[in-house]
Structures are given as C-alpha cells and as structure tokens.
Amino acid sequence: NSTATDVKACAVTEDEGIIIVIAITLLAVAINLANIFVVLNQHHRPDTLSLVLALAAAPLGWFMLHTVSAFHYADLHYFSADKGKVLDFPGTDEPELWDFFYFSFVIGMTAQVSDVPVCTAAMRRAVVGHSIVSFFFNTVLIALAVNAAVAGAS
Image (cartoon, rainbow, N blue to C red; front, side, top):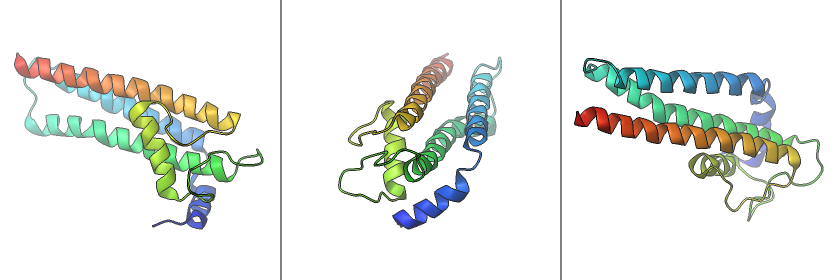
C-alpha cells in the first residue's frame, strides 16, 4: 500500500522524460494492435500460440497505457507549477497511488473523468489527450473483437 509520500518520491524519479515514455508506450500499443490485425487477417488460420500472443497483447497494452498515465498524473498532481489542488480527490487531501490508478483507469474505460474534479489547465490538457487516446484505443479493440468474431464464423 503506497502512501502519498511514497507516490511523491516515485513521481520525482519515474516521470523524467515522460514525453518519451508516452511516445514509446503509444508506439508499442500501435504495433501490438497492428500485429493483432495481421494475425487475424492471414489467409490461413493462425497457429494457436500466435493467436494467443496477439490477443494477449491488447489487454496488456491497454493496462500499460493507463498505468503509465497514472504515474504521469501523480507527477502532474504533486509537482505542478500551479498553486493549489490539481486534482481534487474526494475524501483525501493526500492521494495515494491507488487514487491515481482509479483516475487513470476510469478515463481509460470511459474516456472521461468521474468524481475527481480537474482543477488546472495543464491537467485538463493531459486528461483530454488521455481521453482521446483511450477513445480510439477502445474503438480499435471493439473493431478487433468484431473482426475476430467474423473471422471465426467464416
């Protein structure tokens, strides 16, 4: 169980070069999704291992994207140039790591925030970017599911 102090210490060391980390994460996710489309659209039936690995890449990429975002939100929250609250987590003044996971994964599932007000322009920009990426990622996952169902039916 990470305390707010633990999260602050981690955010200092882990968020350096976040633009590069996010770019690498998005590239890895895009490559994984492209690989799934290739495997599902082969002229011959893919072997079981290829199919399992390709399909496992989708939830793992989804999990990785929102985990990286959670750490980025922690950094933005604790080290913002803006004075005052950046995210206003109900029931706590010192959010823990699970609070940032909650915030990030809600955006990942719904492409919107829920009960955590966003209080600064910089954080709103980060949330909008994450929401847009989440929307397209989720749309591609639905397309993959439909593609897999159609391929399996034929």
